Image (cartoon, rainbow, N blue to C red; front, side):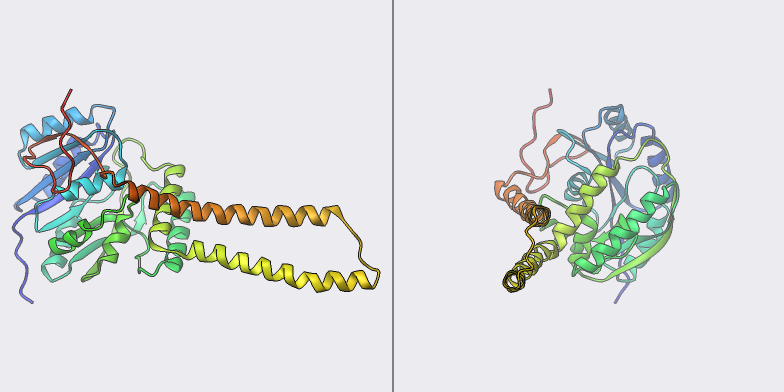
Length: 324
């Protein structure tokens, strides 16, 4: 296979309240990509600090920077999707703006892309600045997801990855609302390879993924790529039904032998146990039904408030809102 020639590299970066990172991120990215044809698509995910203003000023100084302001906060994965929808490059990189993932690694990713890889993802060998609790829960999450999902997901790989245009086109055809992009980019297939790297400490600011959002993100990942929770609920129902049927002849035998001792405690425990299991099963089913409901409503994934250095909306994007 002949080596691919790069016409344009697009870097897609979502930002939320990153006022102290905007300029350092741009400077480091520009230094890493010096000599290459590139553009930066930054999606402001409803920031409430000076991030929108700083991004507009940056776009005014550098025409390679294209800014998309969403009408409110839609979430990290949806903001990334908005940026991917506006990417024009034949190679596209997803990169967070907190400088934990080194922009210099993009050059290595491009080498793998030129050699024929369609998806090149960063595999974290070390994760600087993260607590033992977060490291342990991350390892546990990837282990559980690997067992539940039929899609082979690389452990300790995040959203930092490069996509060839044909892989990106396949990804853009998937418009579900509950998005787990690192899994979706694996699901599309094509030639995939990993690049190991050490993740750095956040440049400034605080993480936008506290425990509550991490749990929600993990649930999105499992529900998007596995039906096992529903199957487990069904199996538990069959198991306890079988135990109940087996208990009938046992109870009749004790009754006939005069050894049956009635007890309210046993009854209460059984009722609470079975009731709890039923509620858990209903909750699992409700989670999937809720996702179906979200999809049926057919709302757009995001709404754009304004753009800078972006001439046209994405193909399936709703009409632009008037700027107040």
